[in-house]
Length: 428
Ligand code: PMP
Image (cartoon, rainbow, N blue to C red; front, side, top):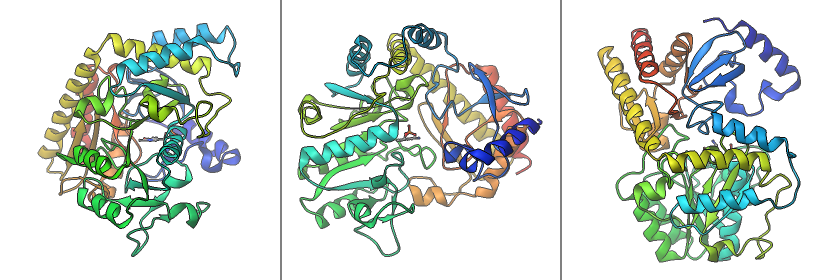
């Protein structure tokens, strides 16, 4: 396929936008080459600036679970836009979507809408600190919770207890309150808690990780965290920005039967518009302004267009729960097909999958945490990525990202993808 116009558009963008993109992961930094510029999308397909048609396995990094330009969502947004695009005053639709979300997700009474997953996680941590009166948080290496300061932390050499910033601009003062644990390692979490007795406000995690490729929680991991939190007066925050309204109607809490204290959302809940949200039982949410002392606000929070898109999306998912089964079957079909092609071509690989989240790691060992994810062969991934792109298949331009399937995919699309994987596998 030819991507000439995309390359020209990228050059122009680089003149006026840092790195030519408004979010770093869109650039092909990890795989090399120029990013594809999109013209439009419909259902399972992207149409790019060169007129190529691509099968999309990213779907805006998750939101488009029912496909691009999904009619009920588009209609809701267009109808709403005609009545004004923002008021900064309460509107009835905010209560409608809040009621629906609360009815779909277990264990939450109230929900506050914001504009991104970053804001949702940042606010959830502030709420946890305000509610518990404690400062420190535990996060896991390889989990991403947006770009707010407290989360841009990695373990420095020799640092066991305190985190170290991994972006200039994040202060040591902020970093010292973020403790870093290894995913799927309960003992590590227990050690951090006992070394910081009475100081930890919350543990935040992706309960099914998607930001180091897809990594499921190991047997008993979520339950173990729940118990550690109960025993130590720590709040458990599930970051369900990726998994919420995707892995089940009620997200990971429903799928794995473990309750969180605070849950954060993004992506699907906004139907493709900029929406995030955080939710908890009433006792915790009552700490939020204006009811309580923890401040959090937003000029465009609960924006009518965003709420219309989100409400249309959640209404569809609520009335068609078979979507989740259908997506899971399609993802399993894809999983088996790709595994067969890679095995036939004798390419070493590990495929991780939960529901409609799947990732291919070119690795000999099982991928269960950030360390094992980092062992995979990135050169093979780069060839795989570009090979598939050449065949008109768009997967995430990084080995540390998950593919998000859309129910708009047909079995013919999946067969075409599996065939393309077979062709590319022979070149690896
Ligand atoms: N949490 C998770 C689990 C995410 O995957 C992301 C984004 N990919 C975020 C938070 C941040 O969301 P946003 O990009 O909307 O700020």
